Length: 192
Picture 1 (cartoon, rainbow, N blue to C red):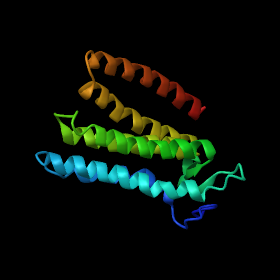
Picture 2: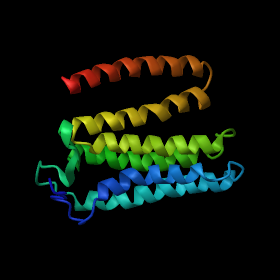
Picture 3: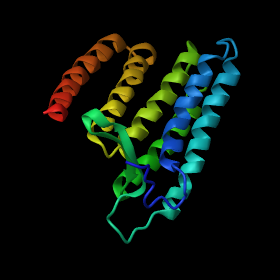
């Protein structure tokens, strides 16, 4: 199957750009010295803010007169399993997508004074979490949705377990167990 960007009025994969930009920022932060706390904080905020700003045109380019998925990106990914790389948004997922980019930027900014230890790891986790959340909202292939769902759960576990309040370890373990069983049932449903 040839790459299909269907109703994507931008002419390039804008949903992929917005979804993977935070992941690229997180990968970059892996190579930054952890002593450069101020740079790490401002870089993470800049990535989240740019991600929000480049997502705003989606709102204005979205055609509200149709129920079809828009900004579609589709091509064969794992042919043997019939899995496609298939992104797109409808009216509901677009709102959640935009809300995620906005709230992530606000969350990163508001954590500047709160996070006092392991700053680098925190901001990497936040950016990876953003990628997972955005992917969940735009994935139109069930397997791809599952991949992003799992990507989202890993940083959430660490955010709860390391930077949570009292009983954070208990909460993180409980979160892990619930999501593990939920994810296993979801995987079984996808496979069958």
